Amino acid sequence: MTTAKPIRPVSRLPRPRAGQFGFTLVELVLILLIVGILGAVAAPRFFEQRTFDVAGFSQQTTALIRLAQKQAIAQNRNVYVRLDGNSVALCYDTGCNGKVPAPANSNSGSATTLARCGNLTTWACEGIPNGLAITAAPMFYFDPAGKPFNASDGDSVVNSTFVARLAVRVSGGGISQDTVIEPETGFTR
Image 1: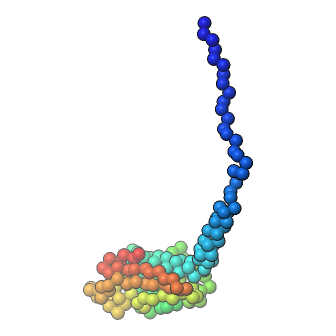
Image 2: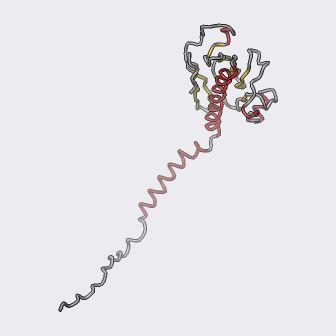
Image 3: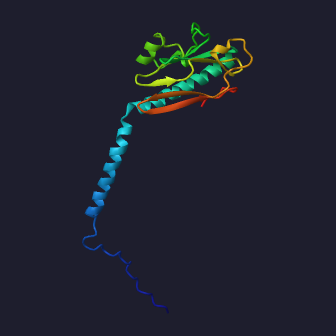
């Protein structure tokens, strides 16, 4: 007959020694120092409005230029992009008498946009926020094939003088962001 072995108690983890609870004063001071340095360097970037304005308006500019190309192809007509330093606007002619309707028939409707786009909310036009600047050619257009042309080329030209990349730079507060339009294809990035 076999005898049962006695059950051994489960071994217990060793108890921590006195003085091993928590963090040392040196560790706490180092963590506070690192958090303070990060706060001093990173926090101002989060609270600088111009950083977000530049990025946001640059994206709006890119979206409007892409819309111009798509409208030109879809409607089989020239669509002009006007960059006059106050706004980015889409038109059907060089004088901006024929205005391209905004997507969903409404632009941002901000006070700046209304002031710089003739108080029209239905026009594909966005006013440049205060404190920002935009640099680029004043006007160009996309033909019905989506190819970019300089406004000075005229309406019935076959060969475009838009032969180099066009960079539309939005800048403000020492920060700038470019929207680039490629010649021949009109690809906007």
